[in-house]
Image (cartoon, rainbow, N blue to C red; front, side):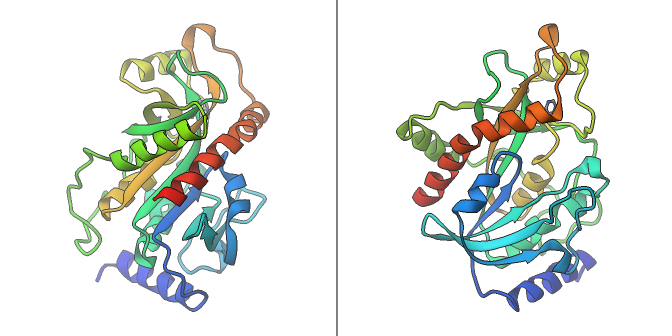
Length: 273
Ligand code: HPA
């Protein structure tokens, strides 16, 4: 048994002393989905610090926690607080919670993030359903010996974001009369935002939005045979010829403004899954 598998088993055993919940849906509450946490009828919350082998957030003032509860009538497990590569965590640390979710019974992973708009038809505050991604992180959580008990050496990525869930989410958005975009997300390490020339390059290579998360978690979820659905809030416009300075305050303000749209879509999507 690999060290990774042993750690997963230990973490799952610990969580099992706290809850018998068998959620089939896992949620990563990124920027803009904080509000969804309030919609979960909570059974139990476990602080990351308490959980063996979980990375512990050092920079964030609020503590990360794993939330077990019911959303739209379904048992779910949600990560409140996620880990980014720019914080200095390894790819394996960032994705460890996703490994644990799988062994708790999760089959479908719902991920949210904040991203910059590269597609000139998008605007600040838009919600984008992720159809695909480009990994420009320069790293990969699957590098190293493969644990065949977790997944294959060369996982297929032809459907990194589940077509069925994407269609369902489009129907949900239509029924709720919420306009959404669809597009390709490219992951950069950050923490700096990109230069004009980098934005131009990212647009050329086929990306509609740029962010600093989600891709590692997606890769690990796909490795383990999970389905993934992702949604991005466009917090700023990354158009090279009209680029203006962006502040974190603005990014957060736009994310908070768009949050109700994202929360409504996720809630109804879970109901219909
Ligand atoms: N780059 C540019 N703008 C952004 C990003 C990013 O990674 N994330 C949110 N807005």
